[in-house]
Amino acid sequence: AQSVTQLDSQVPVFEEAPVELRCNYSSSVSVYLFWYVQYPNQGLQLLLKYLSGSTLVKGINGFEAEFNKSQTSFHLRKPSVHISDTAEYFCAVSDLEGFQKLVFGTGTRLLVSP
Amino acid sequence: GAVVSQHPSRVICKSGTSVKIECRSLDFQATTMFWYRQFPKKSLMLMATSNEGSKATYEQGVEKDKFLINHASLTLSTLTVTSAHPEDSSFYICSTRTGGPVAEQYFGPGTRLTVT
Image 1 (tube, rainbow over the protein chains, first blue to last red):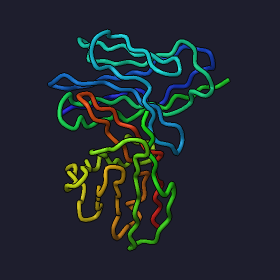
Image 2: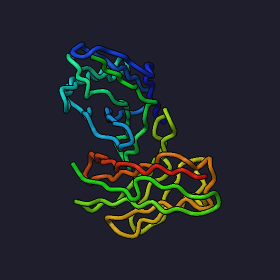
Image 3: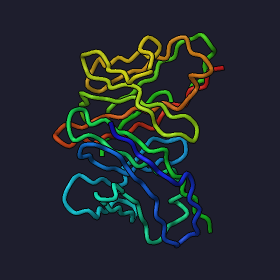
């Protein structure tokens, strides 16, 4: 079974500052890794995913994440945030086989202030 | 990405009644859909995997007789909360799974259920 840990429940940051949202996972098998964003009272939108290949993955809205197998991490970064990036961010993993069910972390609320 | 809709977006019902939530895949045929429940300030918890034409597979701890799932067509799955109680109040989100060796999930906008 897999598990995902997002250590920071909330990250406050000023507009145009860089940000990193941390994600660590645990799994006995290889996994796919995802970051999703959720705006208030909405469903989830895929930001980016790591399947294989290059460990640096670029996603939408200027976000990127780096897969580190030795540290079992998949941290999300953005060099300069906007007010509109304020949202809940979820890291998730899935099996490579079968239904590839997603296991989510507890989420990190990114609060961008002027 | 794929477009997934949910109806209703919000519903308030009285304790003891049943409520049905619809999840539709608008632009592709989804053989597999997932139902999640999200508590306030909490992560999404997978409730069940819904497969077209067969019985849903429920996660451990989810009451299958309380949360009835029907996936009668490739574009529609329904979740019925039977004999709802206030503790069933939550945000319910569905997702559809694309085909292929590396499936992606596309999420609906969610349904806010409040049981009074």
